[in-house]
Image (cartoon, rainbow, N blue to C red; front, top):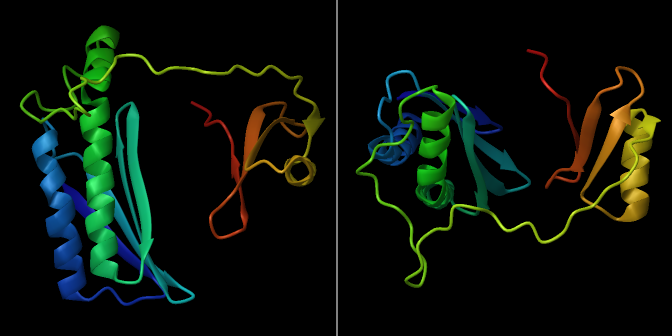
Length: 185
């Protein structure tokens, strides 16, 4: 696994870099082939809070976890635990999808442990408990943010008036806003 460790408002010391790479390196046991995997680790300090964000883009899936803690080393530990839970939870489902699509043989290793809760094995399907349907009114991102705020939601789906594509605006943890646009392939 290749590591890209960067710091925002914090100097990434060799000790901090080694610790992050060592802890995130524990995840390698869950993957079949780690040579082409690039792991992005961002260490950030904002208003005295230490945030660690780890993103591992892979074919067909993006593993991502983020945590804020008063101690950077503790935040790294928590993020790695979150990623391990994600991998264990979704391992079977993702491997099955890759086999069916004829893409990679398997993304995750067969001998990687599977997460079980209270004696129950993971179910294959996710339970959708509610479905909403609505018309996508063409608008710009600023108007979508205003609509989202008026509704009191954390995200808002809309049709972008500029390119006629479905976009999503969302409220970030830092109070600012983000925009999700489809990638043109």
